[in-house]
Amino acid sequence: MRIHPGYHLRELGDDHLVIGKDAAAKQNERRVVRLNASAAFLWRAVEGKEFDVPMLARQLQEEYGLDAARAAADAAAIVSAWTDAGLVDA
Image (cartoon, rainbow, N blue to C red; front, side, top):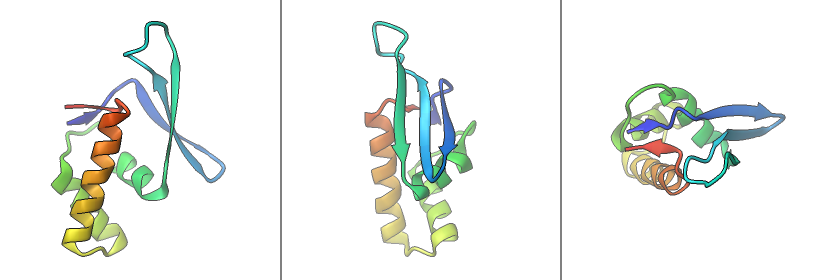
C-alpha cells in the first residue's frame, strides 16, 4: 500500500496534521486529519514508498524499542485508521 498522493503531513506547533483533498467528496473539500507523534513518525518514514504492516512494525520497534507483538498491534491499528480515513491506497 501507499499513502494517497493527495495527502501531505504538515506540522503546526506540536500538532501533526495530514491535509489533502477528499477524493470521495462530491466537491473539492479539504480534509484535515490529526496524527499522534508515532503515526507522524511512520508517515514520514513511508511517504512516497510502498509499505505494509510488518514494515511499520519494524520501524516502531527500532524507534521506540517496542516488543514485536506490541509493534505489530500498533502498526495494524495505524494502518486501519489510515485506511478508514481514506489516506492510503491499497
